[in-house]
Amino acid sequence: MEPDLSKYRLEGDNSMYRLPSGIVAPVVTRGGLESGDTADSGGAVRVSGVSAQHTPATRLWFGKVSNEPGYRSVTHHHGEAETGGYVLSGRARIYFGEELEDYVDMEEGDWVFVPPYLPHVECNLSRSKPLTWMTTRTPENIVVNLPDIADADLRDWLDRR
Image (cartoon, rainbow, N blue to C red; front, side, top):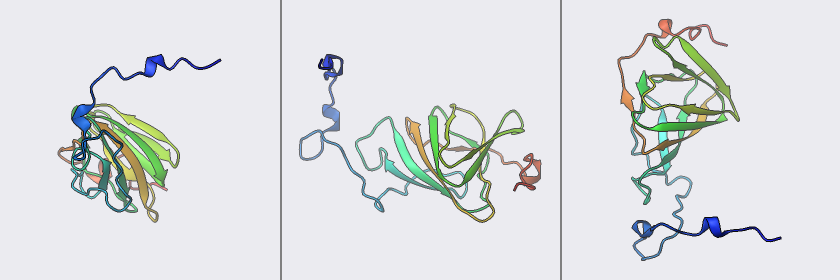
């Protein structure tokens, strides 16, 4: 029995994604040629593989975020953006909550969803190894930095293992 593919037929107009050649096609960003022109939260190295800066994308930001050992971001949120993350390597922590009193820890292979307008602090738990995430946001890479919190006020941060 053949599958019914009728529900996948093109019903919209994707002509806005035409390349200069006039065709609509996938756009590849080669490794090493990602855009570094991104917003940041105090020391995170973000590069975008898919973004409005260098592809026809209009409602999506997808990139890689790297953090040095012991890194922690400033307090920030991502505005209206829904954020999804995947830990490629390392161990991460995200502080959140009314006074940033709560946190979740993640390790390689874990996924995370961060709701819009949620103030948080992103951390590399390791004192010796880098942390690398893949991150996606809609509609773009919005970063709104907020007044920061002292390291000593982040529960279990100074005595992490």
